[in-house]
Structures are given as C-alpha cells and as structure tokens.
Amino acid sequence: MILTERAIEILNRNDRGGFTIPTEGLYPYQWNWDSAFVALGIATYDPDRAWAEITSLLAGQWPDGMIPSIIFRSNDPDYFPGPSRWGSTPGPIPSTGISQPPVLATIVRKLTGGAQGRARRAEVFDAILAWHRWFHAARTVAGIATTVHPWETGRDNCPEWNIGLDGMAAAPDLEPYTRMDNKHVDPKFRPSQTQYDKYLTIVQFGASVGWDQRRLTDEGPFLMADPNIHFVLLRADKDLRAMAVALGLPQATLDEIDGWIAKGEAATDTLWNEEIGAFTARDMRSGRFSRGFSNCSALCFYAGTGTVEQRARTLAHIKRIAARVDHMLPSWDPDAPDFEAQRYWCGPLWPQMNYMTAQGLAEQGEAGMAARVQDDLCRVIEKSGFWECFNPLTGEGCVGNRFSWTAAIWLSWQHEKKLKGAA
Ligand code: GLC
Image: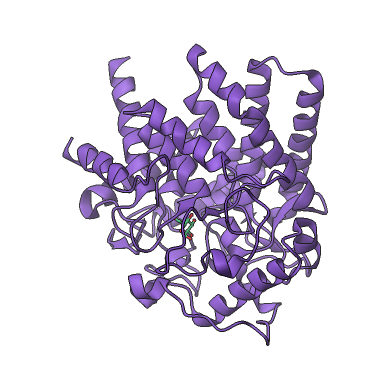
C-alpha cells in the first residue's frame, strides 16, 4: 500500500500539466513510449488524466504521421540535445526528428476495452493508423521496419548497435557540444563519448536533409533492424486491427492493416540469428547480425510470432539467463563479454521491457517464466524503489530515480492483481 501511494505521488510530481516527464532533471520533456506506459498507471486512479497523457502525445504528431520520440514544449538548458540541436522540425510542436517503439495502439486498446471506451478509441484511431502507416512507408527497407538511430529504438547504448555504429564515422564537421546527461548521473552508467559523437552525427544528418524521413532512412549514416521496433509494431498492428474491427471500420482499413501484419510476420525471419539461436538486431547495409541475446529477443512472445522451434530456442536462452541472474530480465546477455550490470542498456533490467515480456510469455502459455519476470521487477522495486532501471545481479537502482514508467507499471500490476483477487 505504501509503495502504491508512493507510485502515485511520483506520477503527480512528474506531471507537467497534461503530460508527464520521465524523471526530474535527466528527462524534462514528454517522451513517446514513456507516456504510453505512464497512461497505463494513471488509468488505475484517474482515467481522464490518463487519457490526457495520450492525447497530449498525439498533439506532437507530424503531418507525415510520425510521432516523435520527444516533444519539446519548452527549452530546458539542462537537457542536451534539446530543440535547437534538432533544428526546425515539421511537427506542430518542436520535437526530435525520430520516433520510438509504437506501443501506443496496444495500450490504447487495453485502456478503452469497455463500451465507454468506444468514443475514445474512435477519437485516436486515425492518428495511430497514420503513425503505423509512417513506419511501414518511411522506415521500411527490404520488407522490415528499420531504425535510423539507436535512440529511436528506445535502448540507446545497447551493444546491439555496435555493428551499425562501427560502420559509420562521426562527422568531421560535428558541431561542438556539451553533454548534460553526465551532469545528472554518474557517467559510468551512461553511453561513452565516441557513441555520443555518432548519435549526434545522425542528428546532424537528419537536420541537413530537412528531416525528410525517407532520405534519412535511405541515405542516413545508420540503418539497422531492431527486434524491439519490429515486435512492438507487429503486436501493435494486431491490436490496431482488433480496434478497427470493434469500431466497425471499412474493409479497406482492415485490408491495409492485414497487409502490414502479413509483412511483419514474414519479416520476423530477417531477425533470426541462427548462430545465436535467437532474434537479434541486424545491420541492414552489411546484413550482419548483432552478437547477443537482449531482452528484446524475448519479445517474439509478445508479438505472437516466430516458429515453434524459434520460440523453444528463445525460451532456452531465457531459462539459461534466469539461472544466471537474481533479477530478470537483463537488457544484455550476462554471458556476453560486453555485459555491464550497471551501464544502462548493456545489462540492467528495464521495467517496461519486463512488462511486455511477462505479458507475452503469459499469453503464449509460459505462465511460470512470466511470473518470474513480473515478480523480479516487483522485488527490485520493493528493495530499491522506483528507479529507471536496475542492476540484474544486485537489484540496485540505476540512473534516474522517482521514475514515471516504473511507478506506472507497478500501479498497473497491483490493479490487475486486485481485480483478479476480486474475481
Ligand atoms: C532513455 C531510454 C528511453 C526512454 C528515455 C526517457 O533515453 O533509453 O527508452 O524513453 O530515456 O525515459
């Protein structure tokens, strides 16, 4: 109970009037997938405010359908790279020029299930459809939705991106800059300087082509396929279809979404790394795979895709890792040489990833492992508090504290437990 009150207090404290920041200091704006998860948590005590979280995110949508990763409603000198570094973007509110994993459709479907939800579903359906259309048009290469920037995948410095980053050079004319992330938290938890130069090189390229998204995909310095974006989008396409059916939308809309789902199912094999026996990221220019099992490899269950054999091999990895760490599910394979228990996406477990992984495993008949993934996150929150991510070996909190999505996922699970108990 105390933790539940504390979680609500965190969400209230991070409320900036209709939208919620991830955490004070480090992340002072509205982030895309953060807001979707945050809505899940707020919906447990204030459904109208939860809905505002979603509509405020959609307010930043670009004319081409893209919903940016960050919406800059102000210019906070404490954050870098802020609006001036991204340059002039075509959306109604200054923003970044890249997107983030599209979890929104799945969360909107969940939040608008009852008869009263129908009007809300109808209100946002077209905007979400346009966003998915954007992924399938502006980001698709060789049949799979790709990514142009590690930040777009939502897992900034995961070793998955090393092959793509190694294949590009930092711009020789990179405008000088001062990092702010390292002022808020210990640099040992954060991406390295070389990585940061490359991240900004991609931003500089995007701005140089006026954020023409097709050019950014085709000509940009970095192009990889990401299991996170792929599986989240495939799952979200399925949820979008279910909402279209419930809303009685025309056959042409269903046909369009069916086309995306068929394309997504076929693209799943693009990410199958036979050598590792799992779905991993892939550099689209060289065809090379990344070299480790990440928490996104496990999302094939959430997307309801992959063959029986692919899922069995994925599950074998999950079980191996479960025997290796106290707290599931680390963001990078603890047996890989570049695993670092405290460095952001190189090892720590992430609340939103545990949420999706547990849901997928439960839906696909793996109740035992689903419970482990869920319980482990609850245990680290009980032990350490509402951190951004956690050391999977010790359960210690890492990077940002009083973190919104951690509080939101806690609330969502507590609420579900209560409902189950009452049933
Ligand atoms: C970091 C995370 C990203 C998240 C953002 C705000 O950049 O990698 O997934 O959306 O912080 O919480």
